[in-house]
Length: 454
Figure (cartoon, rainbow, N blue to C red):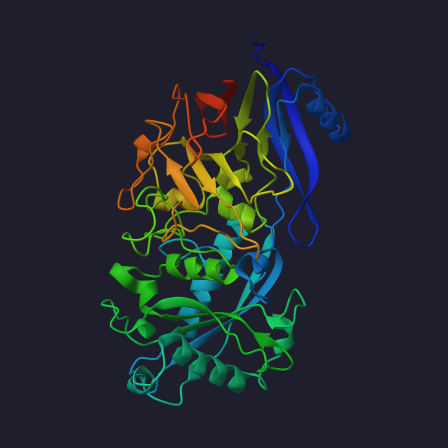
C-alpha cells in the first residue's frame, strides 16, 4: 500500500444549510495527488485518488421534528426574552441581570459564556442570534394559583406565554421577531422569579422547552411555536454568579435538537450514549458535538474516507473549525446524515471547552451514529427508549466497547498519540472496513492515518 505523503491544501466553497447560504471550509490532507488551490482541480483529483471526499450535509430540523416554526439555527434569529414576575414573590427578577446573561460581550460576571457569545462561537458565525430582553412582565395571579390549575405544567406555562404576548403586542414591534419570514415568532424565552423545585414535585418550577400548537392565536399576524419557561434559579444554582449552561441547552431544543441522556434506563438499550460529556447530555457542559452541529447546519462538510489503501489527514479541532471525519462501509450520499456511520472529531480545550473541560487532554472522540429515519422523515432512534441509541461514544480501549447509561466519559476514552482503532462494528455486527492510527496531536491539528482493512 502506498502511504500518501504530499500535502494538499483544501479551500472549497460548498452549500450548507436549508437556505442555500455559502460558506468556506479549509483543511490539510495528505494524499498522492498534486497540490492545487483550485476547487475544480481538487474535485478532479479526489475522483482520481478516491481517498476522501467532502459531503453536503444539509438538514431541515422542522422536517425531522414534524413541526413548522422552530427557531431558525442558521442566518438570523431574533428572540424575545421576557422576565416574568409573580405578584407574590418579594424580590422581582432583574432585567439588567438577564441582559448581561444573554448579551454580554465580555462574559464579565458570568461563570461561562454569555448566551450570545456561545452561539456566535459554536455556530462559527453562521447564526446571528439576538436576544431582546423586555421590561418585566407582572403576572395576573400568584405562583400558588398557577400551580393548582387543573392543567399540566406546559399548559400552565402556555397561559402565561399568551398573557405576556398579549400584554406586549401593542408595546413592541413583534414583526421584527420573524427573521426567516416563516410566519412564526423566532422564539420566546420566559425567565420567572419563582423558586426552583429541585424535587420536581411540580415541573412548572423547572426549565423546559415546549412547542405551542394553536396556530389560530396570532400576535400582529405572527404565530408562536418554540418557547422556554425556566426559573431564574438555574442561573445561580450551586452558588453560581450567572451560569448560562441550562438556558443554552434549552435554546438548542428550540432549534429542534433532542436530549442525549437516557430518561429511562429500564427502556431501550443500556449501552451507549455520550457519558455526560455533551451540552445536550446530563451535565449540559461544553460545546456541541459534530453530529449536532451538522443537524444545525453549522459544521463544515465532513470528510468521508473512501481510500482503497491508506490516507493521512490533518484534522483541525472541531471547536475552532467545524471539521470532522465520517467512516462508513457503503455510505449512501443521497441519505446524507440519516443512516448509520462512525464519526471522528478532534477535541481540544479551547473556547467553550476551556472552562468546562469535558476532558483534560486533547484527543480523538469516536462516535457511532444510528440516524436512520422513518417514512415520516423523523429519527427512528433516540438515546432513551429505543433498541439502538442515536449517538454513542466508542471508547479507545476497544472498537466495540461503549459507555453504559450511567458511565461517564473520561480522558481514557479518547484516542491519543499512537492509539489505533483496529476494528469497529455496525449494530448488525458487520465489521467496519476501515481502521486508523493517531500519529500526532497538537493544538492546531491531529494527524490520523486511515487504512482500508478489506
